Image (cartoon, rainbow, N blue to C red; front, side, top):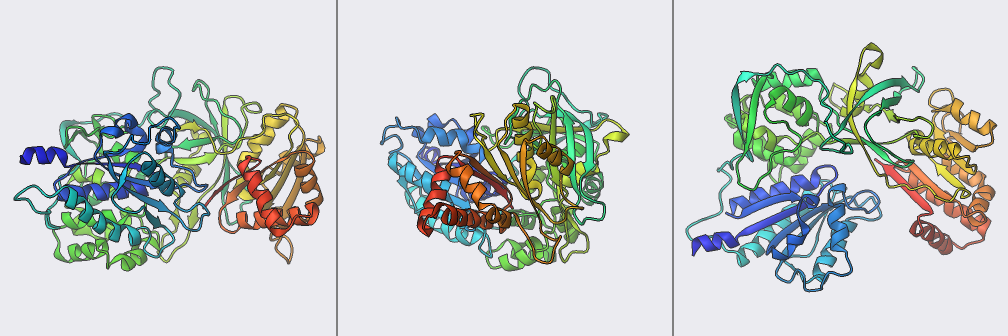
Length: 599
């Protein structure tokens, strides 16, 4: 009987994650399940064969919602399948489920994906164990403020349905769970360099098979005296088979700096040249797809472990189990407890302290970390997305991006730097061949197929990148009716692509409105220019069926722009406040108003 009970005590955890937060939460639930003697699997939604869902009896879904209320990339296929009209309403009647949503209440479609999924699973006959949980990034303690109490309720419900096997209790906090993978060192060391590995075959480049593109140009486009360093970077993609249109995105896989890799290896007393192989600790577990087998410590730390990310609570929890030092262990336990979250926030999140810096602060613990636990402790370096800022019609076999180098100060003495932008900015193609792993992804913005449809593009700062691609594409096709609102600080310092825009204005291909916020006493932004040109904007929309596009930083700008547009609809179109709201909503529904903003 106990064996049969064990076979029934299976928990499947499926996650949809864009930045890794949902995956981290899924892995936390898995650890807690293992302490309760469940056989547990954790998979990204799109890696799971969704047709098997009808055979699952206990499933927890953890899903993030991206900016515009869309599901994360790694659950898109699942999302399409689960909303098929022809699925019978009793499909999932044998399944007990719970949904944990992770979102940000500063966005209008807060936790939209989790709410919609919960409702859909209910429609398909699923049996909810709990109401949908809505984690909120805006809370002082982040999503944990919701996850902690929700997990207590979840285990109470689950253990009532699937009691612990006789004679077994919940494993206490003093028991260290085994690592996900066994790490076995090989005798000989590596002699392989860091040459780009171009895969043979004709597969389109993807996350698992990126294309090593040659960087051909890395040009600063802001004045040297300007506080922000922005680059126009060009890659040669000849022979990649990649195609893209305006609005698409290039994904770039960054790497850690040699200095950080060296420091990390020294701190953990690791020989970077040592080779190892991984063995999964459970039979159904796949090996990390991004790591070669065998692999060197240098490759693992350079290309895989995100040692520059701000560590999550789970990092401190696992570290506390591994610590041989009483004082350090006490502090780590505090940081991983529910009561210690405010202190952890001020130690780690507020100053944006990196994983590497935290390891410096816990030296006795750090040098005792068994290498096999590195893959449980430190997440994988995630690819970064950049709007493509060029068109293949204007620049065949090339991809260009407009990239701000991320650097800012916190109370820590060392400036904080963005991993990908710092790495790309440091590359010097003029001093020899430089290869960057990348692939192309469909973007959220689609430009009109009809040649005579005008477009109004609002792109302050690097938000202008996708519009540069669209304008180049449309100009190459002979399309006029391109209207661009561009904003930056000063005409002489950060007016990106000025000569290009002025040339197109001269040739009659572009109508350009600029807002240089710091060039006069009063600050002027793109929303002021929209109001000033309300007659033109309304004519293009109401008479010529124009499409509007908005891209850029998600702080105050999007709200300022939508307010300005509603003012135009009221003053020029004679609409009331509520009619202007509805007119904008209708433009969004019909995809005549599209926006892509980032924080």
